[in-house]
Length: 417
Image 1: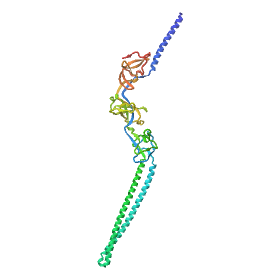
Image 2 (image 1 turned 90 degrees about the vertical axis):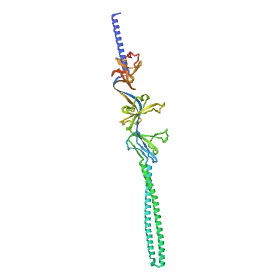
Image 3 (image 1 turned 120 degrees about the vertical axis):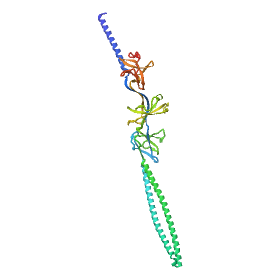
Image 4 (image 1 turned 60 degrees about the vertical axis):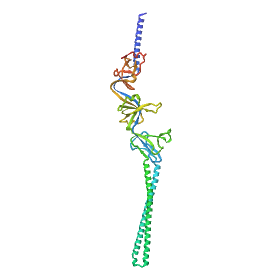
């Protein structure tokens, strides 16, 4: 072989070796960057119990239709799920029928008052006439009695005539007195009857006015109005009340939860019930407002498990967390998660829960180092659904979130104890 050919072969062999080394290095680096990873974080680690639930209003007031008011038909409603203030009109009923009835009752009252006034005037005229006739009869009796007292100086015929006149005058006086009593009793009876009719008309007018004033229902407190289902068409066809619906007196139309009394109701698993206690700090995250973290306090725990209405039914404890300062965007029935803080580690190293694996029954992570992943055993201090606090790892170290392929050149060949 010629020396020139040997040199060329050696050069080609060197280039092939350099290319293979570069390819292996590139493959290792690319494998490292291809795996999802996360850095280990140093800071406060919150040991939490996570549960799901929804927001509830501890205090709510129902809006009901007025009692003793017939023919209630809705003509206007406040927008559903809108914010209302105390004293705002939330429901209006049709007033046309009540106004027409009020006009009729007022006309009947006016007629009853005029009839009563006329009867009183007639009774007054009759009483005045009776008093005049009674005075005349009394005068005639006194005059006849005076004539009788002069019998001694009169003739027998004149004396007998005077006695007869006295008897007639006396009987006429008694008749007049009886007539006066009869007229007074008749006037009192008629006046009393007409007074009762007038009072009844006044009562009906006041009742109609009161009913008319109840045709506008106002909010008893500030909050959000939620209209109740209308079951007049049956349970299967129940829909929230709307304009045009007929409402029965005293029926529930809507409910207004007090937003200042909002609390979180969470379902706690039996295994976590013994780990939490009243007074624990709580962080609430609402599904509809992912950017919002609401601080709260655990205020109540159920003593016994409660059964859910799903199928198959589940059993869980109920935990309630009061929200001291609710955000204005929060509404009852919103789905949310609740993190109950049961412990705080002030200075801890934490990694995502996905980065923790098990080898030979021991916890470990895959630590990125020089383009490859090395198995690194750690000690678990505390565990959360999403994070794990560990010992034996430096802050900022990059750990893999998935287990590397054992056949890959970049996979771990061993680990530190």
